[in-house]
Image 1 (cartoon, rainbow, N blue to C red):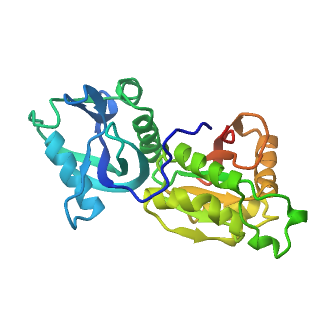
Image 2 (image 1 turned 30 degrees about the horizontal axis):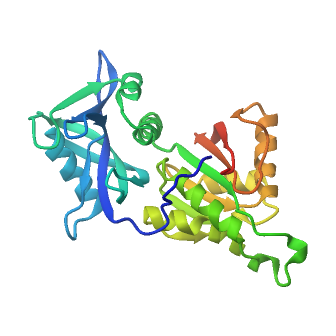
Length: 300
């Protein structure tokens, strides 16, 4: 993982909502709606800013129709991403999966063209990696509405256990740990996330609090991610998270207890079997089974 010069650590100054809009055509299969914005000369997913007092989901439907002309049925929440705009504003965007119910595009102030394309074509058409990450997650939910994703995050640096004079669960992260937490936030806001959870240790909570603030979700405590948890317990918990994309702050032994058995069972894992502090394993789950995993190294 890499960090950026201006960290995202505060609440967003701009909130927006949008959709991964799809339809089915017998000849072409699933197609996705991509928009071209002349102001930026880019291809992106339809989205727009919230009106005062407007609910997120309502804004997603309204903005999608205003930009594309298509009426849509709201589906599963895909998740929230965050980034700095060209004007250096902190913007967060929450996306939903949307099924097109028909309509007709008319050129407008925001969008001058739209394209209905298949998944692979959409991947190559989109201008930004963050939109690609949203599309890929939306595509997984289109194929399997219960598909979930788990980001197993080992807490940031918290010093040496033997040198801490107090209950271990209350051991805080260090100044290095705070820097790592900011960098982790910068990295994980590029992926759509719906929930943030933490094990009972203070250092776990402190690692994910900046991320939760940036994407506007609470930090939920869950003892599933306390020290010593095994794969079976984590997988039972995942059965309750169908359709969610969850960041879970935990400990090195928990991640090892999950990753080693998965590797031994033949699950496709991209990256070395490692779990240093501030590292992440991103696991995709379909029909109750982990189908793939990817290692994200700690921030340098």
